[in-house]
Length: 193
Image (cartoon, rainbow, N blue to C red; front, side):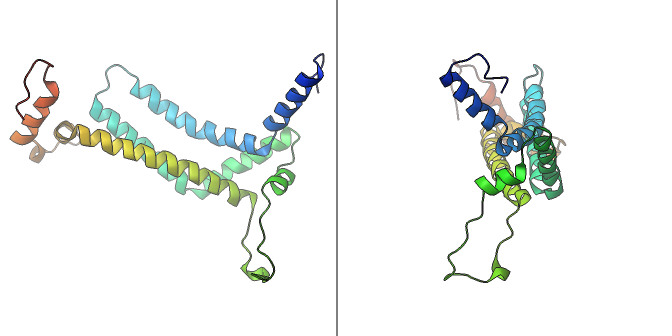
C-alpha cells in the first residue's frame, strides 16, 4: 500500500483501515448518491443566498426543489442507474461489490420451523437494498423540508397570500393587507392587534 510506506505500525494500520473503508461499496454508493442529491441542493442554496431574492420566491424555489426530490424518490430507474454507476466505479477501483454486499448485508433467514417454503422467500438484491436505503434518506429529507416550509409559510401567511404567484385579486383583501403591515412594524411601534 503506497499510503502506508514510511510510517509506524499504528499509523500504517489506521491508514489500511481507512483505505478499506474508503473502498467499501457502502461508501462508494453513498458518495455517488449524495453527489447527485447534494448538487441539486447546492443549486438551491446558492440561489437562496442571493441578495435580491424575496421570501415568496425563496419559498417557491424550496417547494420546487422538494418536488424534484420527490420525483427522484419515486423514479426507481434513476436510482437503479445510480447504483449501476456505483457498481461500475467500484469495479474500476478493484472492489467486488457483490462479495461485499453478500458479506455485510446478507439476508436474514427465518428459522425453518417458521417458514421453509422457498416460494415465500423475499428477493434480496443489491439494487433493492440500496434503493430502500436511498428512499429512507430522501423521505427524511423531503419530510423535514416540507415541515419547515409549512412552518415558514404559516409564519408569513398574510404576505404569502398577497404576493404568491400567480397573483390572485381575491387574496387582496383589507384583512390580508392589514395583517401584512404588521410585518413592517419597527420595534418602537405599538402592536394594535
